[in-house]
Length: 376
Ligand SMILES: [Zn+2]
Ligand SMILES: [Zn+2]
Image 1 (cartoon, protein in one colour):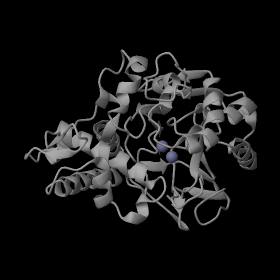
Image 2 (tube, protein in one colour; image 1 turned 60 degrees about the horizontal axis):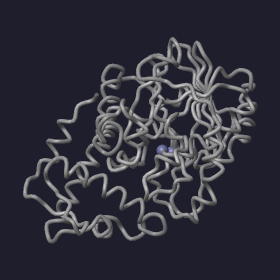
Image 3 (spheres, protein in one colour; image 1 turned 30 degrees about the horizontal axis):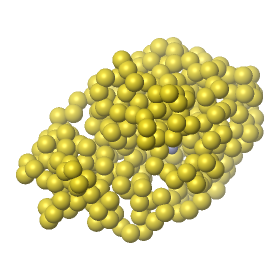
């Protein structure tokens, strides 16, 4: 990869503020712009990598986190891209570190916005259709949010309102709506609306679905229940777009692209450059590592449940080191355990009792269940 990269602007050791240009073998060009993505606290995914793709159309994939729009526009200018050059903006998935700057960038460039149809639906408010136990003043994408109100009231309300004002053109699965040489793939799991963007046969922009050094967190199938009405009739069952099973199917789908195109350059949305070094990814190899990680985590959870039934929180306490459970870490760990327990339940290995504790059934079919999941 390094021979393809030309650094236009140096960043810090995590890659913050770095601007790079990639000349792909077929002659297509990609510019990568890394915008700061820090929330304070200990955990750090590294900057959000936003990419401008110069194919038969010119588009920007992602816009950094809330507040980073003006900075991104400045970086674009520094890379020699003017506002009028963009045909449109594509959003890889509806997480704030990727579409937080969208209103600013779309407003300033006048570029149209494209995203998966699920994104277009979930960024809207449906106060009359929201379930009783969620914040009705949140968009449907955030009904499941587990962050405390003290966090969301400060960081999210303007973001929600801004996105709701946007007009979004939808990109279906396959080739529709992107361009002649660029193909979008729907890869739900980390987020129900996640897209991967294949540029020619040279590079794939994988969003947060495949990351170096980090195993992306899956959503939970349970979230589907809240938005079922909004997504119907296209997505009839929970694991079609939510949870670990959907995520694993998406990984396998991407692996088949990697099989067909073994030389593919993988451009992730975080940590392309981190700790002062480039993270070069082999798509198939990284996917197989992530799959192994989830198999191991399922095995660990089964082991933890061998003594007595436990709640997700109790499992998280045993499974994760205490340092990763500080602050919001506990909520994320619990979410992770739930998504694995959903897969274990679907495999028939675990059941949920009325007291919210998970218990073992005696079977151990999760590994073959994971192997059997086939790409859509
Ligand atoms: Zn994400
Ligand atoms: Zn992200």
